[in-house]
Amino acid sequence: MDFDIVIVGAGLVGASFAMALRSAGLKLALVEAQPPAHADDNWDSRVYAISPGSTAFLQTLGVWKRLDSSRIGAVHEMHIFGDADAQLCFSAYEAGVAELATLVESRRLQSVLWQALEHQHNIELICPERCVALQLGEDAAELTLAGGRTLRARLVIAADGMHSWARQAAGIAAEEKPYGQMGVVANFACAQPHHNTAFQWFRRDGVLAYLPLPGQRISIVWSTPDDHAAELLALAPAAFCARVAEAGKNALGELGLLSPALRFPLARLRAARLVAPRFALIGDAGHVLHPLAGQGVNLGFGDADTLAQVLLQREQFRDPGEIRLLRRYERARAEDILALTLVTDGLQRLFAAPGGAAAKLRNAGLNLINALPVVKNLLIRRALG
Image (cartoon, rainbow, N blue to C red):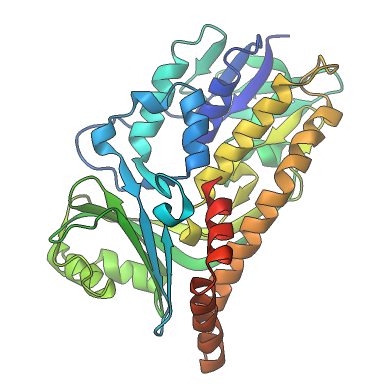
């Protein structure tokens, strides 16, 4: 057997899963088509809101301390506005936690994970390389690479994203639902201090979020219909800044563009199952959410942490690809995945629905939750991970 475990995809989730098994006495390989982009001084347009639970996981891997603290933002409060007069506010102080989330640039987090991987003697990073064939046998899995090499392992992990080659090669079906929306992301300097407050507006043209970066800077995610996204990206920088400031009720004053705006398609995806004999899915390969709750990457880190713990505590199961062992992971993740899928998809449907009755219902719901501290704290605890 060449390896105990081969991981297809060395993004944030795949790399963190490998690091979680660095001391398990297992021989691992990661196969990745392309190395991460270099983390330079420019602000990365793709920023993740990392929950305290995910932060704790990354701390156990020894990678969180490698991040430049001057590039990390903290969310102490979050103000959510409906498309009428409704408002919902969350406070880290009232919840008894240091912060609701931290904001980290994708490139920088990926970079420190790869730096850590390169120092692990039991992990082989095979990059750039892509997979062309997969066979799941009774005693082993065989993965054939484009370069001609064949890897034999007891377990193959699919961590290669929403359009997972490995998931399709394993014959696992997935239900995909395009939202007909794009996520428009960009970073800005703002005229007024944000006081570590995140803002989110449910608007007729989608959902706009301001996320606080260090200093007087913010990152935005505007989930909006395809045609509106195209219109936004066609604007000159000054006009784009003005449009984003106006959509955010000028909450932080005039905005100045720090990084080019990017867009990515939004869809919901859920695999029919997370495991098969000698095979398991983690991260976006198994489930994709609408970004309005900012929990997609945190759900992936939860997969990586849970599966790693199942394998570390496998006791009588000497073989990490044993299906009875892998089903422990699938059962452990079922509730979180289902709950977040239902909540994010339900909110997207509710706020996208036209008509006065739907508007009254969604705005009344926000005001009701805001008036019930116990319910608010339950929601916060769930989001903290």
